[in-house]
Length: 517
Image (cartoon, rainbow, N blue to C red; front, side):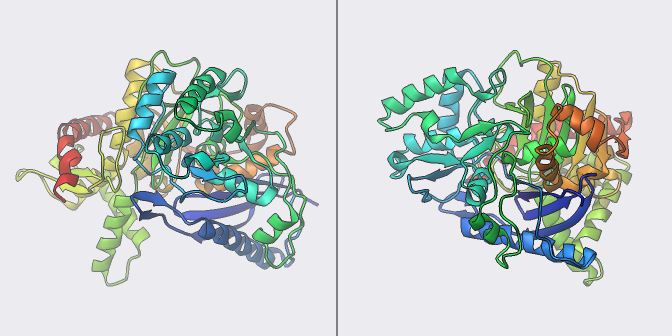
């Protein structure tokens, strides 16, 4: 009987479950749609909805499996949980949630992030768990002295299913700085943090409230009877499934794109957009625009993360589809936008500038998002230029952040693999991304399957961890992978550079828009 591995990822719009066999082929999938809400000034998700969606995605997969194979899914050999990286979930000693989940999308921790970055001499972005914790402490929030543990979404779900409070090292590196040499929390930075906690009168040390760090391939507990019933309320799923360490969507993206070796990288382009490059050597300087995180096996990674990518594109597609009399779906309209963007004669989008900021953007100094289109009376306002401006807007902030790696650190990239919604529209997304990032961009069939498939592969590695993760991926998982690659086209690249110059010159308009609207 073939061994089956399950990966479940709680993404920003979809909770997806993927079951793979020992050849890493997907044998069944399931999903559940959900959405974040802005409540009390914070982007959040209801944890009850997370639990409901977790079960719904699994039950959808279970039904899919039975339809395909004519039998009820009962036995699975390994399981892994992934979720949106970063964020803040504080719990008391009885594991009661002390305040609503604060997601990666929030830009409410500026004071804490700046102070910690200076104290650590290490960039602490606003979305990191430690920034959320320290901001709550600086604000004197009522829950802070009752904290017994803090988690991310994937760590919370893993605890719910296994009873074990632990975190994969890649996900951990978005909570608090990691020492790649020891593959654990950075001891010196913990000492500095403990001094701050003591000064603020907190009754705990940072190590007391952070989960245990584990690397890829290590056992992170087993699915309990209670956990099995959460996934499968019908009671068919067997308990006792070995579970791998919970990982963030950044880590699963690295696995899904075979990007864990130095100089390899990936671009995830969906609701948010981020690029990750595995570093050959440590960065020489500290940049607020660059996160230093790790692969699921602990190698240092330079990461540029932007809060906004395809949401505004999707909004325009939704609106434009209303003018087709229902004959064209949103996805067909998106295909039209990408095709038009690629065919535009004016490679700089003809003077049409788009800002896709639904939320704030720390890299470009935008406090609150206000999507907008700017053009001069002389701009060539065609559908093609409008479309190109929308697509370029989705990647412009990422390129601005990547310039710090390219220009100031001379970071080498030999392979950049794309995944996410931006790459699903034929070849256009890949071609335009290569032009924007001045790097070869590849797409594999496995990358299109997304983070849930990557999480399933990590859970399969738990059963096959006799070699390094890099060798496991290279020699077993991707040995026969089909790859499509686009090299940067010189004309397209020059067009993007001209667009980006105007985009950055006009950025002050976007920064101030929230004051008036």
